[in-house]
Amino acid sequence: MNMEETNFAYKVRHALNQNLEHLPASTTSRLAAARQAALARKKPDAPIRVLNAATATAHGVTGARLGNPFSWLSRLSVALPVVVVMASLVGMYQAEKQHRISELAEIDAMVLSDELPLNAYLDHGFNAYLAKRGD
Image 1 (cartoon, helix red, strand yellow):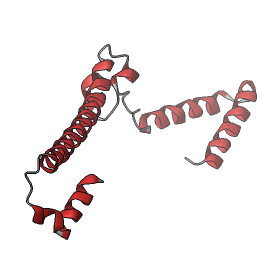
Image 2 (cartoon, helix red, strand yellow):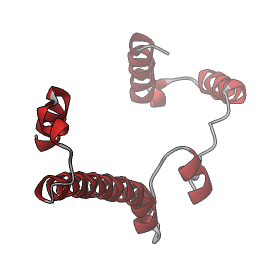
Image 3 (tube, rainbow, N blue to C red):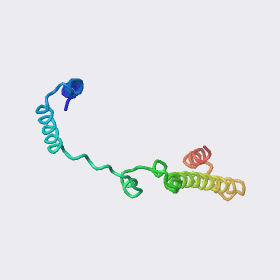
Image 4 (tube, rainbow, N blue to C red):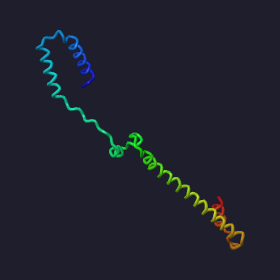
């Protein structure tokens, strides 16, 4: 029913309620019969849905909206993977940094202990390698 039909129905109802005492008995009985017929044809109301925890999680509703005491578990299930990923990234960065430091220390130890042949110092590729490793 659109808004115009709804407004018309309210106006008719208001007019009938104002003049109800002045209507003849036959008219009121016919109106009562029409009302009963209209109510019989009316579509049944949609059932009210009750949201429980199983359907809420299936539809993406968090426990905090339901008053679920385990809402911290749902928050933890989101936060825990983020924390694990961040910790693994920090760990990988630290491991790579330590590996680079140990490589540079090994090269420095070789240079200082004179274990490198003299040709290594004259090789431009070795100088480029040292320059690249020193960055």
